[in-house]
Length: 480
Ligand SMILES: Cc1cc2nc3c(=O)[nH]c(=O)nc-3n(C[C@H](O)[C@H](O)[C@H](O)COP(=O)(O)OP(=O)(O)OC[C@H]3O[C@@H](n4cnc5c(N)ncnc54)[C@H](O)[C@@H]3O)c2cc1C
Image 1 (tube, rainbow, N blue to C red):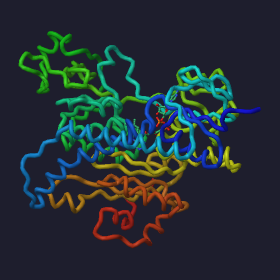
Image 2 (cartoon, helix red, strand yellow):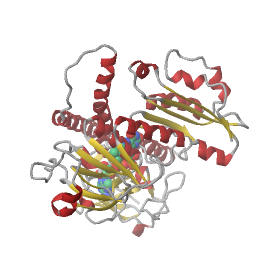
Image 3 (cartoon, rainbow, N blue to C red):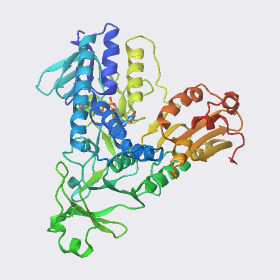
């Protein structure tokens, strides 16, 4: 049977673009549909703008520290608007780069929504239909608000990058990495940040000791973090009436008439009642409480593709769905929701389908970072998970790094190795420190290669660095 294309990719984010380009490089005829902007979540409303905001938010503290080193500055102030303008210019530039990369690879791009009609046919938003030997679904995910009255008053992560002005105060709801990163970013930019998380500790799924240290550091910086806390009720401040007047607001968002001005771009001052009984008005509320795979209305189930309970596409180790001609990669499969993983899944799909070399996706030992202040870099098992599996030794060092100790900052860093008693292999490595993301990328190579504790011990320290501690820890702090 003749098809219009060998491959039709739905979604022009991290995974889809890479898969389309690498498939086209094998000589395949490839088309890609993107309903919004090329680059997807990572480039337009995720990793890239977030990391640029992480950088922006760090300079205030850096300037403070510089003073302790003898530098003199006047009063510093962060101006959001020129930053936002530059940020968006950079995102436009990157979007253009993605478009040119696809063009240069010979991929035909349709800038509209696509859905599946049958195992070999997609329909575009303009009604046009295209057939393909294979369809790759790479539609990613989107942030969702909790199911509660007035939840629309809260922003989601996508909205932060488009704010006209920064709010004076914000309530961030959630304890995952996106919530914690935005708490640190916005605090660093001068916003008064309160964070509610309903669980007992932030960053569920990461190593407990690392989670504890990050929570302490966030609080020490001035983030008002409330654990075991959630919103019971919320409404526009103007509707809160007596309740607000009685309980007042300790946010300086309130104007002369007692009603706070809405920060442009936010949904306006919101009165919030918390599970701990507190009532307060915030300039803005940000829900970072979860994401959902983009599978609604895609025609997947009609084509024989099985969806999991949360709507994610079920795939095998080759990213193939229950419909043999349809594959899925990236966040829409809800396996490991990170950009390099979506890219890797895309490349292994091409290897399997277009290069005749079936290659299962390797999800073991993926290094990752949380860009809080300080950062967390992590690979492998947490101490808690490892000791459920086998006897382990834990090597751990928490100390004040030279740079901030000199500035008399209380900041501590953490270096931790979880080691198998039987094989001596490093099962997990967890670093809480400035630039921990950079450190874990390199330590990750050794861990992925199967390095043992003794391999780390044989490696000579680089002095004076924070990272040298990772090869100089001699005695385990615990065996379990
Ligand atoms: C705030 C935030 C911060 C993040 N930080 C990091 C980080 O630091 N490091 C990291 O590795 N990961 C990070 N991530 C996760 C990362 O962005 C995702 O894992 C990654 O973008 C997933 O890529 P993807 O190709 O699966 O989907 P996406 O990048 O989401 O791309 C999917 C694309 O499909 C399009 N689309 C959807 N439906 C259709 C349709 N029917 N027709 C046509 N087009 C469609 C969408 O518009 C989108 O462009 C972050 C995410 C967020 C939200």
